[in-house]
Image (cartoon, rainbow, N blue to C red):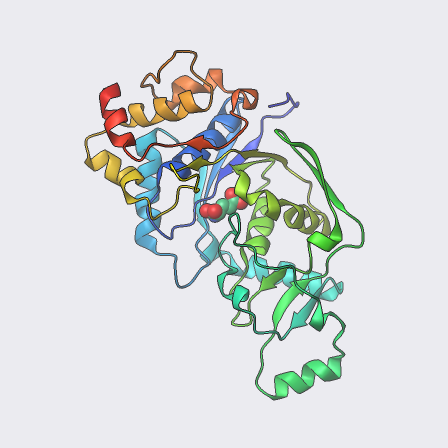
Amino acid sequence: MPSSSRPPVGRLAPSPTGRLHLGNAWAFLLAWLAARSRGGRVILRMEDIDPVRARPAFADQMQRDLEWLGLDWDDGPHFQSHRLDRYEAAMEDLRRRGQVYPCYCTRKELRSLASAPHAGEAGPVYSGVCAALTPEACAAREAQGRLPAWRLRCPETPVSFTDLRRGRQCVAPASLGDVALRRSDGVWAYQLAVTVDDAAMGVTQVVRGEDLLDSTPWQVLLLTLLGAPTPEYLHVPLLVDEAGERLAKRHGSLELAALREAGIRAEAVVGWLGHSAGLQDTPAPVPCPASALVPRFTHQALPTGAVPTPLDLAACLRSLG
Ligand code: GLU
């Protein structure tokens, strides 16, 4: 990471919608190392705004899994579900300034808005049908009992930001579209909640999987509208299975709890992750605690492409001792 005068404020931001798997552990270990290697602070934030998928039991389990890995935090856990008034206040501010508009389209993609759109999940760019509705047209729809979602007006100029691995990114308005910030049933979208919280919590460093790179322009835009500074971004390569698919909740055998129950030690998992991140110079992974990787961390060591994960990883980890 570039040396800046102040230690960063990073965050671990899991969505408690399942059990943590190796892919989550990889992203959280790297986020933790990026902050700790520069003497930074770490915030734990549970992104639990999805009323259908988020469960308190998963949040508890995630904290135990993070602790098992040896990752600690200075602040939190904060729960987004307890912070809804902040999202309301930010929306009110955007509404007053004409930055958002009501949208009465009942689109399928609105359903999944509370979750971060990982690669391929973002849906098509919105056509802007409702952007120019008059107050009378809105009133007519509401008289029929239709409640609006709320969309952010896309900027007229490109949005730019720097990612530490990929360099300067410049995204044209045409590929952004008007993103929805709130569903018609009142549920907040990931994009709004994550941005309001990063601003309110003074986050200066965002490290996460590169499948969230497409969300960053919206978050940079929202931060600017909310008058908050832009953090530094590091989007890390993904762990993938043998078919090249992002590790996900369906890879049950790679859940941390399953690995632990299979008798695998946290040091073996951390050693394998650290080796895959280029932070060990031995030919094979060497088990180690997360703290041992802190002085070795540099984003320049990270692989350029996705990291393949053998599905029989448990056997390989067991052999590490
Ligand atoms: N909660 C999001 C997820 O689990 C991550 C959000 C972020 O790092 O910005 O995918």
